[in-house]
Image (cartoon, rainbow, N blue to C red; front, side):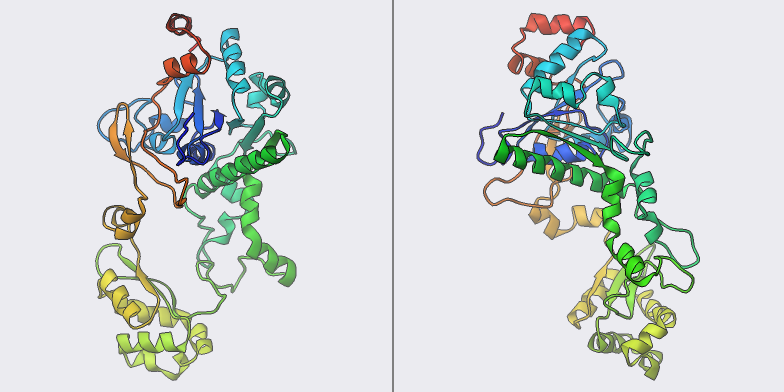
Length: 415
C-alpha cells in the first residue's frame, strides 16, 4: 500500500469485482485517492463480463480485451488479477485476499456473488469487520430484485426519463447512461460512509445499494409538485420540461448560432437583463409593450424565442455570448467536448484531463476528478490494468506465493 501523505485512502485495500461504470466508476474514485484496488476478473471469459473491455473508442487500430477506451478510462490506478472461481484453489486464493481487504465491492446482478460462494455470511467468516458493498438495479431483496438493469433502464424505471422532453413529444431522457455515472458516485459514497462507521465502531457491514432507488431520490421537485399541488410532471398544456419555470425567466433557453450545430444559452433574469438583450437585438418587435414585463414575456415565450433565435442565428456563438456577458446578460456558447478538453484554459489549469501510462496503449488522456484536496489530493498516473497484468505482483507480495507456485497456478488455469 502507498505510504504517501498525498493519498487520503492509502491505508485501504479494496477487493474489487466491479465493472462497466456504475461499479468501476466508484472504485475509480478510491483508487485515485490512494486505495489499493485489486480488480478480480475471470480468466476463462477474459474479463468480458465488463463489456467495456472490448468496446470503442480505441486509441489506435488495435483491438481486444486490453484496448477498450471506456474500460481503460474507468479503471485507472487499479491493479488487475485473474482468478478462476470455478476451481477450489481459485476460491482459496480469493478467501486469502478477502482476509486482507477492507472492502469487497461488486455490481453483479443480485445473488451472483452469493452463488460464487462469497455472500456476506462467508465474507464475514473470512474477516469479521469486512465491508461488503453490492450495487445492482433493485437491490438484493424485494419484488424486483431478480430483474437485471443498466443505467438507461434505471433512468426509465425511476421516473427520470419521464421528466425530460418537449411538449407533445415522447419523453426524451437524460442522456444515454446518466445513472451509470451517478450510480458509481452513489456507490463511492456508500463505501466511504461504511468505512467511516467502521473507523468509529470497528463494525463492518453489508451495504445493499439499489441503483433505481438512487435514481428515485433525484425526483424531489417532481414528487413535491405532485404531492403538494397534485400536478404531474408532464401534462396537457404544461410548459416544456426543458425549461425551468422557477425562478421565472424569459427569454431563457438554448438558441441556434451561426454555423453547423452551434448554439448559445441565454438567461434573462429580470427586466434589466431583457433591456440589455433587447438593445443588442435592436429590432422594433422586441421593444413591443407585451415584452416589457416578465409576465408579458412569459405569456409570449414562444414568439419571444423566435425573435431571439433570429438574432442569434446570424452570430458566432462565442462572440455573441461574450458581448451579452459584457452587457450583463448571463450567456454562454454551448461548448463541444473537444472545446472543453483541448481549448479551455479552465479545465486545463484544473488538471481535469491527466495523462496515464497504460502498459500496452501508452500515454493516454483520461478523466480526472472534479475535486482537489489541499493536503491529500488524488493522482492518476497509471493506466487501467491489462487482463491479469498484476498476477505476479499481487500473488507474490500479498499472498507470499513463489514464482514457481504462480507459474503452476497459471498452468492449471487457476489464474
